[in-house]
Image 1: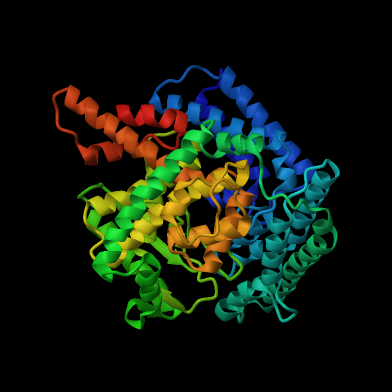
Image 2: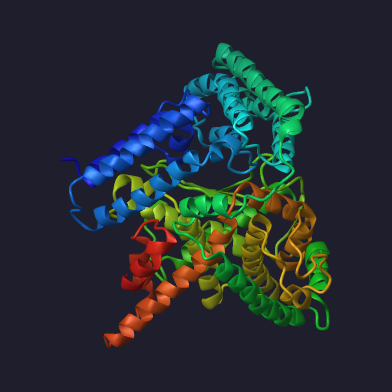
Length: 566
């Protein structure tokens, strides 16, 4: 009889073989020349694999230890959630600038080894596979149209624009620029490989241009004008991304309460920066004052790297025992066309590829600093990197080490920002306002996401919190009103706010994962403190952090119970 660990290891190997893009993100050894098959046949094969994995889990020997108990529970929830998405036809209308196949296919090349001339040989073959990957994806979208599951027009336009950006304007696209790195480093060694790379890159650029043209000419006329998912689809996504069924009324109401709390704190911090000024007036100063700006993309990246390294050094041995093997987290700048939000990619399974944070510039060359410090702590340490890399080192089953649940991971990263505030790391009123804005932005995500997707009306409280907002109490949310709302609540620039709202509309429920996940981490910490008091002992925060991180990713339904016991 196979063990849960056996099922886990087989799942990782089989998914990596069937979905090489996911395998590359995991850092698992797989065929580096292939790309994921996003065709209807590819998704059918993935569905069969996932369904078989669930059956194997059910038939496996009982858990032999906590690692198998926790890992088996996570696999049941996560794999089952992905099956639910495929069964619901969500992959047939999967148009997204942040998670969709065009974005995933391009970004996988960011993770590939390019350190030697030999390492570029599989890259050339993988570049040749781009056209087939996008062609298979097109077939899936066509099936969605045929089956009455069109994506929203707004998403189709956004993805078309993204693909056009990467395809270039006839003078070489993103892939042409990518392979130029080979000539700069190794061109003299092997001219034939250089020529092959250029030809393959041109084919990949053309594939993105062709796909964008098809979206505009064929898909857009059949896309729906409806942005919202509706409650049924929303809950399907929540089961996968949050590991729970949401009480939407409770979460919506709580989000507004949390916003009110944070707005009051923001007002106090604004008074410290510019007495008598409104938040928007303070924000204007913080985003235009040359003394508070960094000029140039590379100086900006270097500053972000400094903050990352400072946090790793300052927290090591204090709040966390950070293993030397994971004390490197590199800051990168992704190419234009990427979504506006910063993101993290974890280390490879064997830790040979370090964790990396990615900070999009969205065409900017001047950067305000007040609101980025909190983001660094969120993405790197003590946020995603500490969590994601630590999980690689602790005693968990293989799939669980590589896994991710949005509410668990994003909740921890938001908790990490709050922890840094508790520890006094926001040393100026400006950076603390940035932290508060980051949290108000995440609370705003809860209400905007639920409101946009499920039709819940804007409450009367909105008029008090944001008197200048275009949203009307008692009326439903709208796209442009949501953008204005994110600017007011989160202090965002308009381009970033628009990218955010597009993200929410393409990824139902994910935006709620941050604040609802943080709430779960805080509830778990409070429960653990209460248990310590009841047992007559002091609460050991550092020890609780270590034990809690070692649990691995869990859905919200399971998380609080385990955190309370940690």
